Image 1 (tube, rainbow, N blue to C red):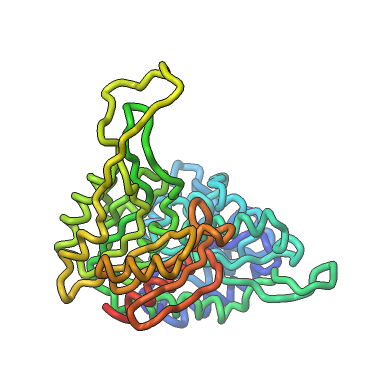
Image 2: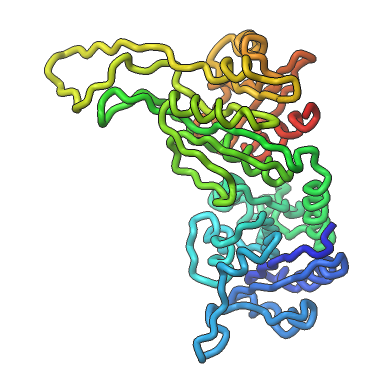
Length: 398
């Protein structure tokens, strides 16, 4: 499935750089077109001449290829590629990617990349196990990047760990499986509406009722649906997260705004995933000016907001599918099953604040998927992986 695919291969300063030749051969053998971008440190381990002979393309390393002003456009590379593979990826490069330190051509290309990114770490086992490296890898996963896990070995302490770059044939296989799955997905051409993030309900011009939702789970679902060929419309509450500019995105603030946009979008949708943490109440009145502190007590009268899931459940047609979310603090399964029936959902994703290190503002989640036919429980994992479990379930019924 790699025939005709355009791959940017990033090579960094690792002893494993010589294996890039085998990766290139594997990609080219399957019909892919490969453009190498190498860091200055990478050229200390393998020569650009060798790489160019394999790809039949000049190797890109610097911003300016000649002294006459000719320059290499990282933006054009980001638009050209169907995928970017960084192999080997050193701890230094992973750290720069995770924190946006664009001090070489490879990192600027990564930051401009519109296509999926695959990262194959390669370093000393103890370096890989270090909390800083693991934190940076988790950050890359939260951005939607795929980490091709390194091989196991033994740490200096004698314990087993990972660090050595995965074998070239398995790295090529990872890309092949990705594009194979992309072509065969049941979501191809389907229109999926996804809500994400919190809503803010104004008290006065400077205060609001809201919650801690970061939008990470919803945005992970957007990327997973898009990866499987779906046409996604994202209705996002006030979050700082960004998505591919090609995705249709509607920004809202309040529940009322999200309700109006969701009803409009659902009419033409094959499925809706209601991941947003919508405020259940809003102030009955909104002050036109900042409320001053004049008394010890301030009483706010609250009115219920729209129940978006219930409203869409009433509009739902036989050929449409709906996925809801239930974030609970107690009686989790009982409450989720009630919502499943009341809101006419096909299945509901349950998570709990009692699972530490999950839900709001976390990169991880731990869910159960509940439907009329039963319940599936999943272990704690990154939200990018949780998104795959949820979309797998959606594909089984769409």
